[in-house]
Length: 248
Image (spheres, one colour):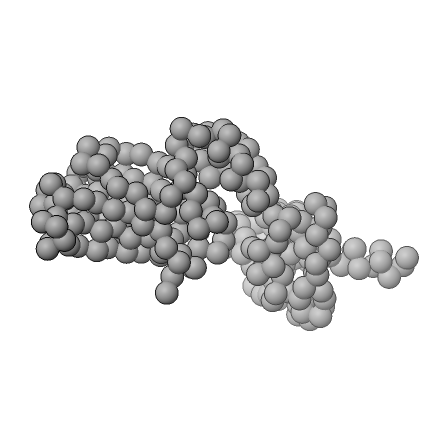
């Protein structure tokens, strides 16, 4: 029992009071000796525990202990019994079957549902049926190119969200596809423009984005599909096909 109590005390000591994550090196101190999270440290002006001055001094003893431990999953309260080293626990958290996700339309429809990955499909089909599509290719109409929209797309056994924005000031159609969990690197989305029975075509493609990526950043940075208005007009009498497919 003593060993378990000591272990729990160490994990409590290794938990950041700001973000709730386990501390990872470099672990620095404040004047009172409190430990500071390396992820939160750049955003802090003072110690989150005592408001004292932060130092650049590292807690080498605690860092050594941290590297030797096997950390319990942050979803242990939900039933996960997995443990991993400090370097491996983050990867497990991203893939843990007990992890909960927000509704994929939280930002655009103010839906505050949360649930596990297998439950997302049932939720969107029930609560967001009007914006849910079950397909991996979609023909975008001429009128739809020039208005903002979002759709949940059920394809390839996964749940995606297609966001379409028409950037009027810059005269561009912007498309981004997010996956509703972390494994976005396995998929790509593409837009194919075609006219004259396929004699003229244009193909644009991008990797599917993580559910945790900021859409505003994706659109502003250009890390999505962007089509100039002039190109759209060139294919105004053709077809526009959006497709989600596994990466090759």
